[in-house]
Amino acid sequence: MALLDIKKYPARVLKQKAVPVEKIDDELQQLIDDMIETMYAAPGVGLAAPQVGISKRLAVIDISMREETVPLLVLINPVILSQEGEIEFEEGCLSVPDYTAKVKRAESLVISALDRSGQQVEIETGGLLSIAVQHELDHLDGILFIDRLSPIRREFFKKKYKKKQKTED
Image (cartoon, rainbow, N blue to C red; front, top):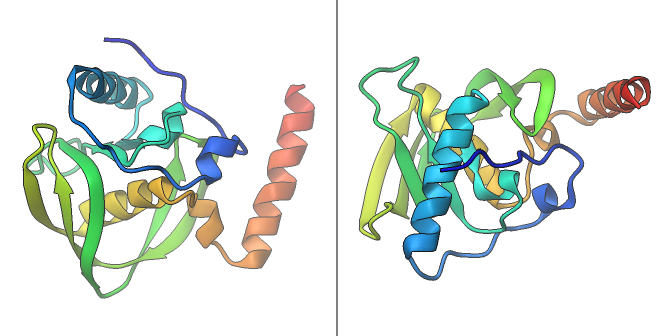
C-alpha cells in the first residue's frame, strides 16, 4: 500500500466530473487500499478518487471514529436515489486544508453503488454518514464544499486563501 498525494484547491481535477469505473480489477483494488490508507493518514473521514488526482467515480468513507456502528464504505459509481430533510453541519475537506464552513445538506439519503467486490448495494444514510456521503459524491461531480457557500462567503474564502498562498510562497 502507498500514501497518495491529496490534491489541493484549486487543482483542476477537483473541478472535473469523474468518469464511471468500468471494471473492478486488481488495479482498482490497489487504488481502493491506497485511498483508505491515505484517508486514515490524513486523517479524514472520506476521500474521493479525484482528490488523489484520479478521475474515477470512487469514494471511501469511514465515520466509525464518531459512530462506531457504521462500517468502512467503498462506493463505486454511487448514485443518490432519494433524499429527505435538511441539516446544516460544519464541514472541512482534505483538499481545502485549514478551512471549515457550515453547509446545508440533505438529512437522509438512499444511495445505490457497487461495493469493492462489484455487488450492487443500496444504503440508507442519516446524520454524519449522510453528510459524508454527499460531500464525497460532490467531489465526483467536480463540486467542493466551498461551492455550496453563499457568494459572499465563497468570495471571503477565496480572498483569505489567496492571502494565505502569498504568505506561504
